[in-house]
Length: 111
Length: 115
Image (cartoon, rainbow over all chains, first blue to last red; front, side, top):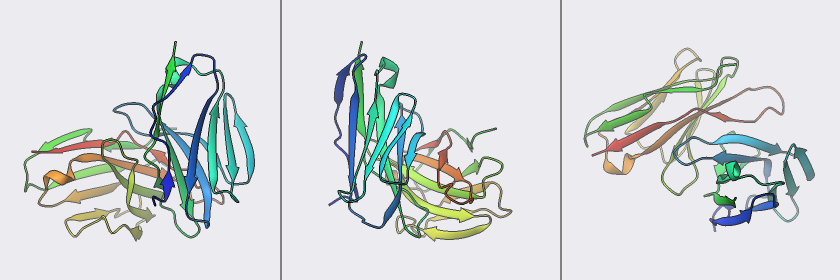
């Protein structure tokens, strides 16, 4: 079992819809959770981070964390074609600074 | 606020040659990380520095790989006797050591191709 699992996609949504991206992790000691966006050929760009159970909103993005279920998600409202990218979920555990990444979910927003 | 910079952006080398990459972190960040990313995968952690001290190394970092951060500012990653399996994007990230500030910001990466 991978430490951080994501559906590889592609996840295809129409422009203006809500895109829902999911991630599960295996280490119950994980404390910090991050979403990165990566365009093809570019480096990852941090878009959201969450440390506590519940929801965290920033503009069109909402991160949701459920530590009991070991589940973190990213919602993108009013999806735009420019949101088309690979979204990477990353997790850090107690006492470690290294991030463990999932393989990413490719999102396609159809105009 | 200048972001993380990496040089070179692209490197093509022949198998068996040595290569060195440089990373300059965000100026006020004292933590620096190296990751490697291959096609279709997420970045994999290689090593981490706090100031000049190398505090964590992945088992992925074989004895052909060495990283330094001599003055706690920029860092170098050297790969000796390169192999075709070393072809990847090498990513550097930095973060601040302040409480609850664990977010890591990535540079543009160095794409290595070993022929």
